[in-house]
Image (cartoon, rainbow, N blue to C red; front, top):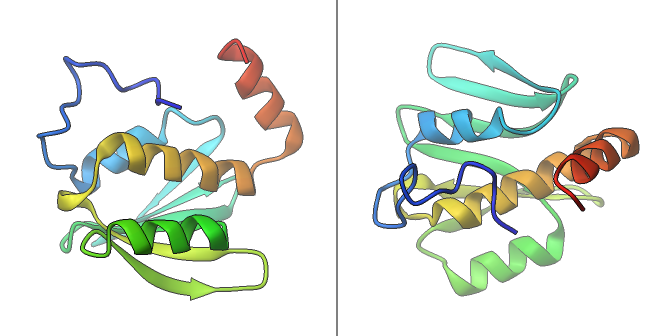
Length: 130
């Protein structure tokens, strides 16, 4: 799945992903709210957090399923690190400058889906022709 922002003229895989760009990408998802702080941004769906971005460190923490996090850690340990976990989710730390922008957007979209309502997800999928 490719995010709506992924056009050759906007994003290049060779271009390093920045914290600011990740925040911008998150706004393409419905009902996303941003809580800006001095050094970080909390990305939420109607107040339910699904990602945090640390601007000075160019890092993100993104909600994921346990199996997705395990796969990312196994395939790209220089990019992804384990964050905290609960019974229902596992958080992934991302070194954004090393990450593939499309892969990170897929992770971000899946985090949004884990947090959004069924109605919001259905409307989003219908708008995309899915």
